Image 1 (cartoon, rainbow, N blue to C red):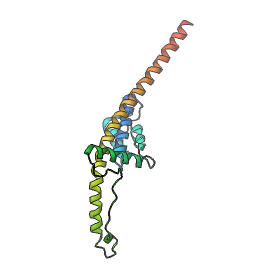
Image 2 (cartoon, rainbow, N blue to C red):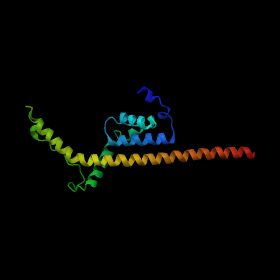
Image 3 (cartoon, helix red, strand yellow):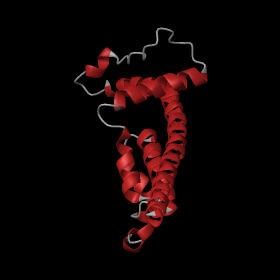
Image 4 (tube, rainbow, N blue to C red):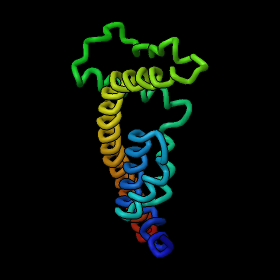
Length: 170
């Protein structure tokens, strides 16, 4: 990994590299709940994007934003799947059988079955919603950051030209 990490493109704040890095970070930050930073860093190395921007923008999901983002992704996925099953807009409660608390050790199979059933009802809409949300927000982040950075460069160039013309006239 040493030679790959020493590439100057990974550390330079260019418009293209920074925009791709930010988009990768937001994408992986929304898509997967674990190992977001290593995944975005690996993708940034492969795509030669800005590594610090990719790693920092994964923090779009944090303990404060995690719940609302995942609930919105669940609702989006449920809407996309056309699931009218839970019209009360609540996430269905998980029903763990009472025998799961049995100290004899045989109830864990029924508890595991309840968890798998619950994940199959909540998991499909959540995974679909997270995938759509990650793709849409990643693309939006790329376009917005690219536009903002291009505007900033144009503004700086205009200021330099105005300064040169102002000193040439004086």
